[in-house]
Amino acid sequence: MRALFAFALRASSGRGPHAEAARNVVLAILLAQLLAGAGHDGPPHAAMRAPRHDRPRRHRQPHRDTLSGRRPRG
View: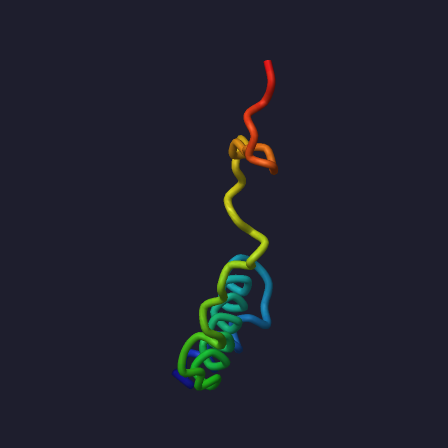
């Protein structure tokens, strides 16, 4: 890994498409080393519950009888 990193670092100092590719290789190696060194075991948090106020919306209101229980006239 060190030999590839050293070769890519030397090649990245020039100009042209090969130097640009070597810079991308250097960045990829550095990113891989950062991720490998992080030592993270898993997801940082437990799964979050849905908020209470986020319920499915009803299109129609349910029918409600009169409060006194009487039948309407007419």
